[in-house]
Picture 1: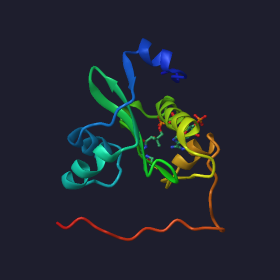
Picture 2: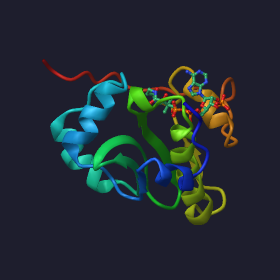
Picture 3: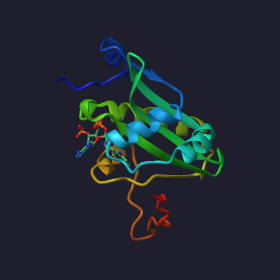
Length: 150
Ligand SMILES: CC(C)(COP(=O)(O)OP(=O)(O)OC[C@H]1O[C@@H](n2cnc3c(N)ncnc32)[C@H](O)[C@@H]1OP(=O)(O)O)[C@@H](O)C(=O)NCCC(=O)NCCS
């Protein structure tokens, strides 16, 4: 199948690009489908409404891709939850989502604001296309283990 290159070509395939945050159930399902770590219903219910800017891709209403930006809106911004349904991966959809998020950042983030993300595996090649740079060794990303209870 041909690579999709623009929002216009999405429309031709019946895929809608929408500036919105998905609801909790579809968000949680998409993360699991894309082999990302599961997120709790509680966390999604609290966290998703606090999204600064979100983008979805839908086909016939079904969520097939997403990405969002969280942060304080002035000093710190983080790109999170970039995911495409496996059947739609490798066709340029991830690039379209990241392009929308970066455009939002270029328009709204004040000069000097810190813009960051954690790149899983080969996704770093996608972010590099938009100018993201690895921070090591000057700074190392760290996270506090906080596993869901069973
Ligand atoms: C990562 C992900 C969002 C990329 O979306 P996608 O629609 O498959 O990617 P695209 O087709 O838009 O590819 C854009 C660029 O990403 C990079 N890329 C994406 N997947 C890649 C892979 N498996 N290996 C190497 N590069 C890859 C390439 O640089 C590619 O550009 P190119 O086609 O010019 O080489 C998607 O594959 C996905 O949901 N993966 C599982 C969840 C995940 O890892 N999310 C990221 C968390 S940080």
